[in-house]
Length: 399
Ligand code: BEZ
Image (cartoon, rainbow, N blue to C red; front, side):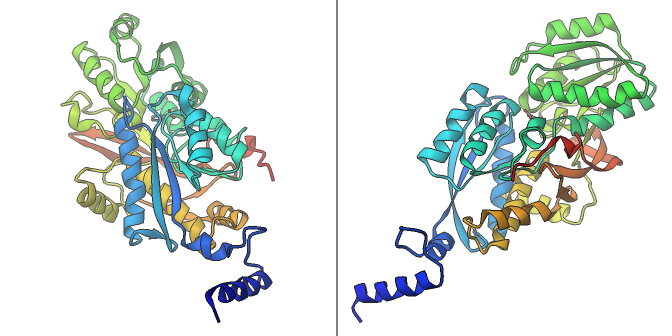
């Protein structure tokens, strides 16, 4: 048999077996399972959230490394896109990944405003989007979609338990400080949800434009308002700057500071003792006794010569979620329905502990209280188990 005859015979047989894509003349199954999986890594690699982007990419790649360089038999090709945490560039950059680079999925991003652009493109194109940080609540409530999954948190989720904790500490009047964009606003709203219900009063909400780190006038105002406590949302390099400025202004030790764990995660090495003793709530922390945590921390430190933080865990879980989906379809991403069904029912064995997806595709997960001790965000307790927040009921999943 000459080669062209052999190919015709194969195509005929493959066609009879239903393995050909319409009109393409090539065996879909073979292609789908052998071509490299194109992963768009759309993350901030510059600016105040740069270290968060790097940790997420590292965490994701660690899963691939642990799987011997392939996920369910597929090698990966990364198309890296720096989104600069710039909301005005979100949709354009996601569109480039989908329509110019033809990625199979987008893993991204960190900033809630940029995420809104990715969500728009994911909804329009149907391309899979795994969100490894950005907590914008709409992504898993009003704008939920079969192809959009989150492995991190919704913005109000880690803030909600802190409201009750601050009230339980006897702080009756609080000032909130946050960057004025979706993440800050939803974080403050989550805090207030439980703080006000517990009888607390927010005497003033102070806002800083993102990514501004000029905190002097805010600190002067806090000093004159003299609240019982301050609740904060900042993250990355901005959080480190805020903690140092709070101490330099003489407020540390006078007016207790609380926040979601983003205030102190990944930055403790750079702030001296400015964060010592601060309590935060988050879905991860140091010393967590989850079965997968020790091995994860060792492997991450060995591979990247860095200590993992919550962002690394979220990137790692993005890899685990993709792996669960790909395994169910033998690496064939054309079988989207089956793949997404597997991702919906997956129990992710995360370094933070096991968790599952809500109806809107956001983690239903335990929330921990942590306290800064030296360079550790030491877990001191579990404040809420299996928190689904904001309630997934707001998601009407399109079919
Ligand atoms: C956000 O923009 O959603 C975000 C960024 C950093 C930490 C937490 C949330």
